[in-house]
Length: 262
Ligand SMILES: C[S@@+](CC[C@H](N)C(=O)[O-])C[C@H]1O[C@@H](n2cnc3c(N)ncnc32)[C@H](O)[C@@H]1O
Image 1 (cartoon, rainbow, N blue to C red):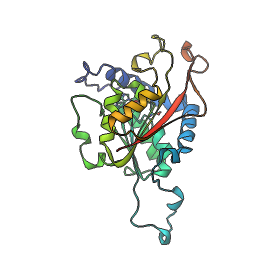
Image 2 (cartoon, rainbow, N blue to C red; image 1 turned 90 degrees about the vertical axis):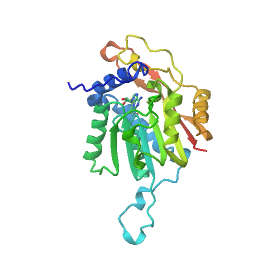
Image 3 (cartoon, helix red, strand yellow; image 1 turned 180 degrees about the horizontal axis):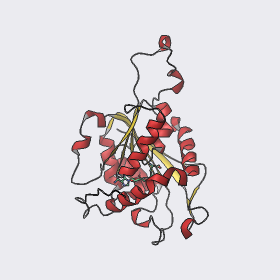
């Protein structure tokens, strides 16, 4: 197995290294292992386009009928942070013009890009990059300093926040990437019992879910507290159903929260 891990930030970003290693190993099996949950999340995001509240593009308008073509073409750009294999991008691709993924794990990024390519999408339409925007002493990493990585209409994180050392910093860094009136979206777990330390993923988890109050404070402090709203998904999801590898089944309640950059 390839391991190109550099550990510059190892000491003060204590969970970063563990997340990178864990998700590099998970990447190839991730979509198959979580197929039902991910399908559910895609559906739940798509039913909440009005809740997220952007001026989306309508997939049906994009019929190639040049007589009806609106000009200038509207752009709706998504930053899918901690993108993994691209669940949030897939949910929102029909309503956006560009999906840009960033993830700590190069194997997750490779899975994201392989899937996008298989769908016939161009690099301009859907593409992910390896990186970390949440390193405290590296506020503007050179790899992400070009205009291509700013002025997004929406920045979203699906099931990533509970893995971050510093969710408050992550939210701030993402809001910096939004254009005026841009929307921050976080999808994650509501508070839950602590994971057993023997669980393979337990060392990658920094937060055992988030309360509404905690998430609202994160949005507000990051500068995206305008029109804050939080909604709970219509049903819980189960991980390790059937006691996979002898590991306990975990029930999780999921929220989706949105706020506008003030
Ligand atoms: C549970 S997966 C979620 C992936 C995807 N968003 C989804 O909803 O299926 C968590 C992802 O967060 C990534 N991750 C963890 N810490 C990160 C960080 N500091 N910066 C960027 N990505 C990170 C991991 O590599 C992993 O792909």
